Image (cartoon, rainbow, N blue to C red; front, top):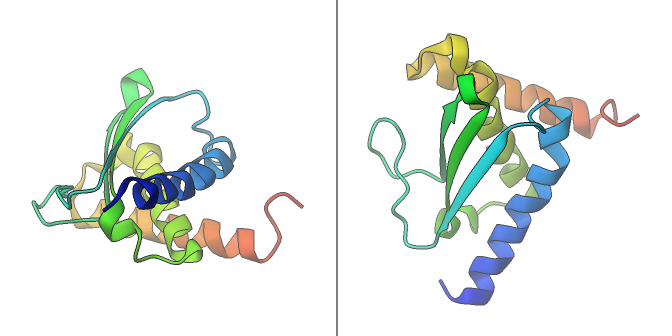
Length: 124
């Protein structure tokens, strides 16, 4: 991925982070982001993934890795859901314990946030 394409994907991610961090109550967290263009972001199960986050909820910190090559394949609605999904990991990490249950919970939360936003309820 060339620099201009990587910069575009990073700005798309940052646009949704700027929108959603305060809405989901994570505006006070310290967030660290790694924007990777080489398809080397792996999830907890070791598989290649679009994004991964390691929340440290006791310290209100999180480290995100973004796979810009895979992110580029998303339209804006899909990318927004990916960003919210990763943020939701921060919300549930304290109690979720990882695994399929956590993935299901954050997927459902992300979809609910997106649906609510697209219906004009958020920010109304």
